[in-house]
Amino acid sequence: MLKKIVIVLVVVIAIVYGVALGYLYLNQRAFFFSPAGDVIEIADTAFSGEVVSIPTENGQSLTGWYSPGEDGMPTILYYKGNSGSFTSEHERYAAFSGAGYGVLAFDYRGFPTSPGEITQDNMLADALAAFDWLDERTDDILIWGRSLGASPAVWVASQRDAEAVLLETPFYSAVNVASERYPYVPVGLLMFDQFPSNEWIGDVEEPVFVAHGTADATISVSNAERLYAEIPNPADLWIEDGAGHSDLWRRGIWDRAQVFFNGGS
Image (cartoon, rainbow, N blue to C red; front, side, top):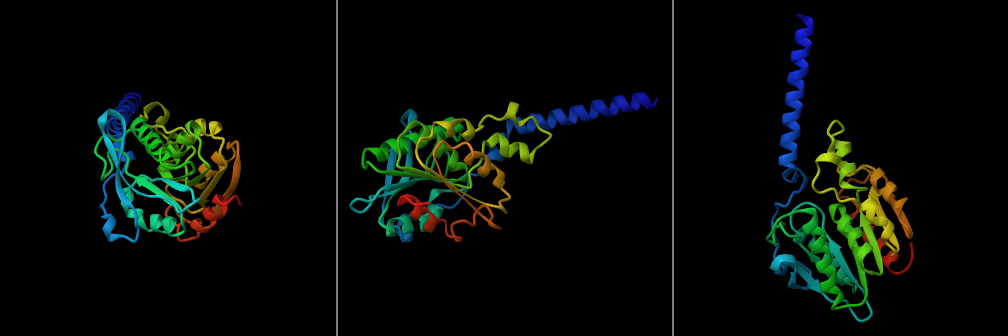
């Protein structure tokens, strides 16, 4: 009788586990991506750029904000993170522009201002499209990727020539982050969008600055440390004690970025 009970329990657990895996597999993009968010009009910000449309694959386009740099100044191509619209970070763009830098920021397809489907392939294609659009307007491009956007930043830098790359709270790979959160799930077998930054970083020739916080509960700091260790041309690794996932801007990353962009570390 005890043996039968054990067998039944094992079967029930296996069924529940299988159903849970199936649910995660079918709904994984809803768990992974967080596109919902308010859209802020450019006229309601201190950023003095213009709204632009960037063509991408399949006749679709991306909505972005663009401002050219002052004479002799490079342009920061900003790859946003996972949540909401790029417009929510308008204070950053105003700071970049106020210091004389050009700025291009945009929403990937599927985020609030750019219609389409959110997938890894689409995001990488969109990231390349934004770089190529900007490359037609300036010769000096600085890449800044934040959080999820750090992965497209690495991908683009491995495919195109920029002046420098800044990665803010990057992950080693999306699979690595998922495995930390769901240690009992075979995420490597289930994930559609794995964003293997660790596989692309070896082809990045530009100098790379990496920033992260020790209290980041979204992407653990070990991700940045592991990724930095594999960068062919590392510039600096800034680990801010006690900083969470969204704390680095107010803790001075812009000051450090300007030093880096000017050739320091």
